[in-house]
Structure formats: C-alpha cells, structure tokens
Image 1 (tube, rainbow, N blue to C red):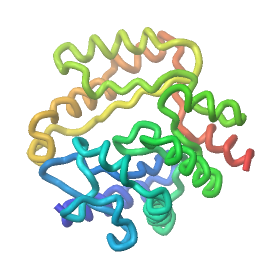
Image 2 (image 1 turned 90 degrees about the horizontal axis):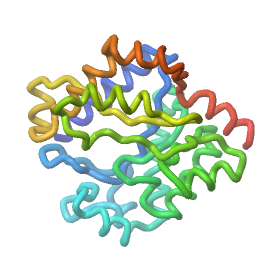
Image 3 (image 1 turned 90 degrees about the vertical axis):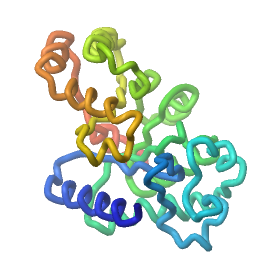
Length: 236
C-alpha cells in the first residue's frame, strides 16, 4: 500500500508539473478510508500521535468521531503544513485548500486554522456549506454561494439523467459540484470493489457531449479556484 501511494503521489505531481496551467488544490488529509490501502501522516508519527491509530495510520471513516475527539490542533497544524510544503517543494502552485472526508475540517478550530494557513500561503479555502460560507463572505473572502453538491452517493443507474437535471437546476450564483471520475480498470476495482462504478459513471458523464451541450444551453460559466485565489491574495 505504501509503495502504491508513493507511486500515485509521484504520478500526480508529474502530471501537474507537466501541465502548469491546470488548477488544483491541496486536499488536506487526516483520514484513511480505504480498506485495502491505508496511509498515515507525512510528519514523523512521533510528532503527531493524536492523529494516528494503533497501526500508525490515519483513522478510518468509521473512527472519524474518535479522531475529532482526540486530534490536537497543534499537531493538525504540523501535518497540514507538511502536506502544503510537500506540494510547494515540488515547485507546484496550488490554488486552494480543502479537506479529505472531513467536511469543513470537521471542527470549527480546524476550519479556522485552515483559513489562517490559506492566507499565509496565498490560497483560497473551499467551504462546503453554511455557516462556513457566511463566515468567509463576512470577511470579504469569496467562496461558493450554495452548499456543495457531492454526487458520490447517487445511484449509478440512470446517473446521466440525474446529472443532466442537476445541471439544469443549478441556482444563480456560485455553485460547486464535486464529482469523482476514474477509470473502472482492474486497479480501481481492487481499490474500490464496491464503488468503482461511481467513478466510471462520473468519468463518462463529465466527458460526454450531453454535459457540454447542457452547460452551453443553460449559460453555465465554468470557473476554477484561480479567480477566488486572486481575491484571497489581495486580502492578505
């Protein structure tokens, strides 16, 4: 698992280095949710003991409440900084920060810490819903106007029709829709035996002529986090 994750990280960084105009964020991670592939902190485990389980991995999804009860904020900061610095050390230029599996960081103090780090590093923050959206907008910092749409748990049957309707139903303002595209090959099926179809169907719709046609018909403007990042940087 460790070898596979190292190769995945290397491949992702090589892809981003080869495509410097491709916007991306740092997906701050304290959760290791895959049964077949477990991972832990970039920081020495001795420095962040409140963030790891008995095996030295990040906590699983089922144990997230335990993580949030025991995680020390100073250790969260150490690990978050290590993850951001690893990306920057590779001469990559992220646009924003968000959290893997922990909606809005999972705790108010973790959310607030992430905002501080974002300002320090010249990045934006992805707020998932209210009142966190309101908190950022009250500071004059741009973020989504509406609750994040995350379609991971939609039934894969007739998903294209559901996605088409979701696009047509987008309200005025800035919305964000999280999809999880992937190729349903043997590797993905080994990693996610129960849910690989979610990623394949997302991939199929995201690249479909139907999706592009609806976006044009509805006058939807596609944005990355770069315009938001520029305003965050101006407010430092």
